[in-house]
Image (cartoon, rainbow, N blue to C red; front, side):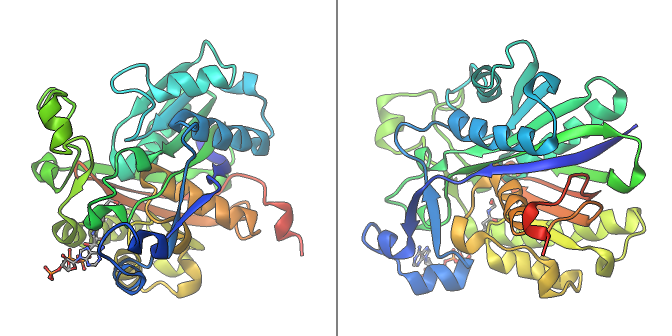
Length: 337
Ligand code: UT7
């Protein structure tokens, strides 16, 4: 039994926050943001939309496109750093409930921007071991709730959204997830951190006044580790599986910064048409960025059954991961020319 990436879905909130909007909020400008990151705009969820709502909308689409029904889903895994509630219940519990999946296994994982690849690794193991047949994995983020819109070093980067996929069993090797790598190094924990609110700095008037509940990032230091680590990781996963970079149909990286994506793509000598980019229109949506980018490709008709896909991600922790797979789903109607 292999695990197969059977479908993809995403939900993108309607409201758009442009670089020009941010110019009115902090000391920045469109040219700086675009040149340093490749970002032009990002989407922001409504006040009455919570992370689980975004996850439900993406999840429903992924279930429908898989050809399965809700009753076929055995487990829900949600990767998020902006859960509905701190500690409990998990956002996955709430997503499962809102989907009407009341008795399935559901839990969150915390691996920041690498969360979707961690969830993929867990789902693959569940399916290959026979524990579960069909697992719904979701990356959902309402990052606008943990971003400090007075801090120009972070608020220009992030957006909201959700992406979801169904991972199912198959005996067809041509539709299988080939390999998933995940890793972490907690010695870099202060590079990307929300310092306040946990046991290290319990919530208090001081933590709130000092804005300790918002995300803090050492951007330039993170950038350097990201390029070095991701480049090594993607080279390793291809080498281990005896796959040449020219054979990759789609490289779908975490969309943090165009310059990181370009550096890793260049290290693999990838052509522009192999590299999927959505950073310009969604910004960095953490765990949701890879499935949102994959969904974009699928909806345009670019992702077909059996296509060889390479994923990579890097984020707070620090965490990183990569995956190589053959897409196991059906193409979208847009692919029929
Ligand atoms: O997804 C999770 C993982 N995250 C990442 O991988 C993000 C990694 N980091 C990055 O993408 C980049 O480091 C940033 C886009 C965050 C920053 O780009 P950079 O080229 O590393 O800039 P920098 O931090 O070295 O800052 C350069 C200058 C500084 O001014 P001085 O000290 O040279 O006078 C900053 O104060 O740019 C200034 N600056 C800004 N200027 C205008 C920082 N933020 C802004 C801003 N607008 N928004």
